[in-house]
Length: 405
Image (cartoon, rainbow, N blue to C red; front, side, top):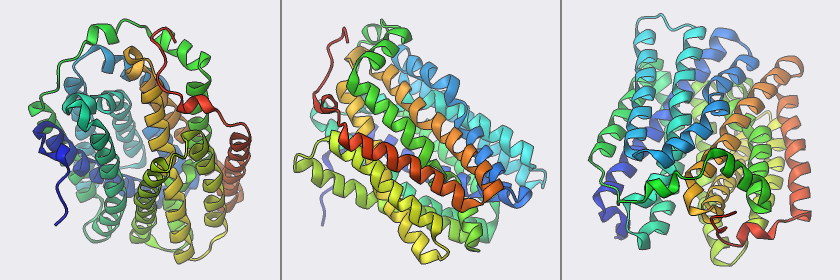
């Protein structure tokens, strides 16, 4: 029998990890139900893209604040408060759906509330993991955390598609709401190691912005993620429109997103092998952007579900490369006192561009069709990816900056 990873013998991390797995699955149920309902109610790709903007838009103004909260306050309490907000929003959707009163405007309002909680809480959760485990177990904890996200990406959409098809959206929203309760309980019983928050909070956000601008590695990482999230976001956020174009229904939507999750699992394994072989992040990151362009182009022209599933899986491989490598590189490069703030900037480079990219692609799809919306993103990815391969930034692999930047 395979051995249980050593880090799972640490109760605080184990409980948070299991609850996070459940919550990530619940979030995918939410994505399936809300996205499909908006498409049915409006018959508009632009509306589906706008829903992504409502979910991700709060990151425009709140990601940096989330980083400051992560550096200044008890990260458990930040997590519990933001998860409570998200749980209440999901519960509101469930109740309104059960009563037959869930309209498109209400879906947008409650999705926005979920986005606020996500934007404020994510930096705290990203930097809480090192406080839950002994230092020697940190690499295993980070790897297991990424694996849990990928398992949820695989299982959540498939479960969501079937649940929506058999029981309706109410159950999708209700299960998501309950998953946040599990996370709150797990955080309440977690006992992080004591750290010097005063030292971490000494630097202001302006100083972190200065470090991000002056350091070529962090600047390239944040710009690269911004371009990737903007151009590649339609792959995930407009999946309901792709499923509808293929006449695949909610189950087909679940399978499309599940295929992307399967690709992410494969991508995580492949990336680990490349890292063991010594391939630097300065190579894998632009390679991921370039390869994603090819997968997105195939998805754009495909008119058949099997080919679309293969394209989604291919995109998932490189999607996860971008997120794992960028996140890890920033944590390894950032001055210790500014890890939370720079992860807040990373979140801004992920979430806000997804909102812009999905909304823009939705508008393009409304006017010229879904194929044009996807191909536009593929062209942008290809151009930046090739440039990144030609102009690689070796400082991405150079290690941590001194506190002075």
